[in-house]
Image 1 (cartoon, rainbow, N blue to C red):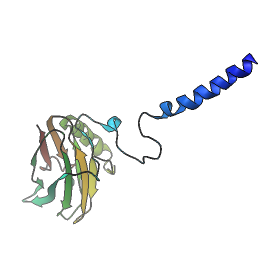
Image 2 (cartoon, helix red, strand yellow):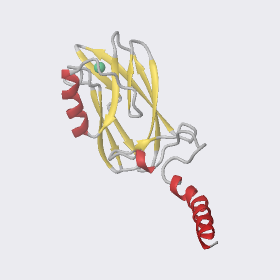
Image 3 (tube, rainbow, N blue to C red):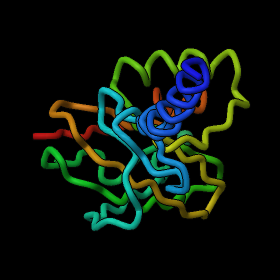
Image 4 (cartoon, protein in one colour):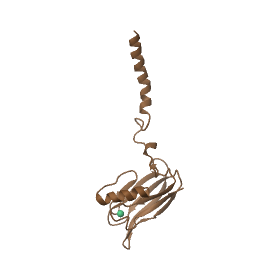
Length: 165
Ligand SMILES: [Cu+2]
């Protein structure tokens, strides 16, 4: 009698505690929303359904240089930006957002492994004449980097700065 009561209480306790166990992170049925856990030290993936300021960035080549236009962007802390990327050049380019330190390190890895493809929330690779976009929320103040990490491209001028105030 006592044992059966105990077993029943365990089942009841489990039933009530189960939702608490699954609560942190992504809730079931929510789809892939972005939570605090996606936050990096340069911000976090944005929510495309929420308002965002549009910033157009063109990838181009001129006089033997590779460029992003513009190559300097100012953002308010907490602001969400929709980067509308356009590759006007005749070859592949990419846009990789990160801290300067991470991008330089990542660039070294790319030299060893040039076929590394980027399709992360902070990066986009575009073929010639293609467009793409990235939505990013800048939750941290600081100075960040965006670069094309294809071997030799950053060295040819293909990088820019995001200042978050
Ligand atoms: Cu490039």
